[in-house]
Amino acid sequence: MVLPAVCRAILRAVHEGDDVINISLSLNSYEAGDITLLVKNNIVDALADEAFDSGAVVVAAVGNGGPAGLPHSPATARKVISVGALGKTQNQMPEENGYQTEAGAWAACCDILYQDGESSQYCGEDSGASFNSKGPLPDGRCKPEILCPTFAKTADWSPNSPVESWDEIKFFGGTSGAAPFATGAAVLLLDLFRQFNWALNPGAVYAALIASGPRPWPQFVDDPIPAGVGKIVLPHPVGAGFLSGARTVFHGECVDIEFFAPVGASNLRAAIWWPEEPQLFINTEGYVGNLNCVEYHNRILLSVISPKRLVVAESKSKLDVFQFAMINNKMDSGVWRVRLIGEELACPQVVYYFLWFKMTYELGAVK
Image (cartoon, rainbow, N blue to C red):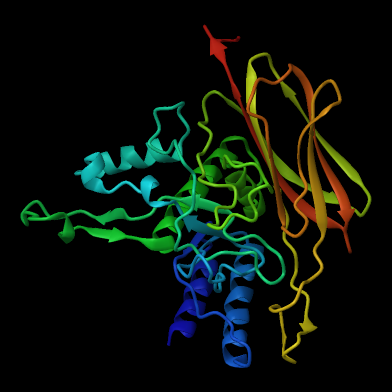
């Protein structure tokens, strides 16, 4: 009964034209010899990918089978972004922060989601929870890509029904509780896109979520506890420069995306993400599917080039469908370039990009 309900829910969301779809569930993983589970996973993955093609951002919980278990469908779909949970020290329970009203909870969420110097409750370690299901998947893709808080309060109590203990307050935990934070962040990013009259491409939102992480990539791909690019902290709309869009990259081609950094710019974050279509094959068990083999990926590299034409940051992950580069210090004023390098492409590939950097102002002028 679960599979039909999941399929109907995804199709209904697409029919209603939802901009963002949150999927806080995981189907059973594939086991050798169980063709039924393989087919079920492929059906849900395909529907999630179709939702992306229809224009929806699809956020999926990575699953709670870690640290040894692989992610389950639909986190394994090609065109979703998967979310893991932050480690215990980063998940604040209500009694620790005093979220005793709806307004207080909303203020806390804004404080968590937006970067605001060192005052944010979201600063500190960015390690993943040990229960996060961990990639890489059999085809090499990293999972999860991002981390978010979990164990948040999801229901308030009635004023006429006094609460005797915090056990009576409903909490949403695991990676299922982390995914809605990323979903909310995606909604905020879509509002930012509308503000700048950018195309509402879900792939660009994925790139923006990845660009909100603090961890260099891909140095941490072999972490025993999966974390991706770490905890997302959205750039505040005030005091930052942004650029987003999409480019088509061909094999052997270099595509430069230029932007101007004013005096006072710093802390650049640049990310790219691209959708790949699944490739059918016959695996060692004799089944047609997309598990238990190493598939071919389009390989696109990312470099950041300063006005002095020096490569100051780069990302060269081999098997993933995203790259992330960062600069943690001041930027020279002038024209910068984010370079996309089509190193290994079987066909032309649409690549979504998002970059942002801090800007320092004083008395209304750039300092």
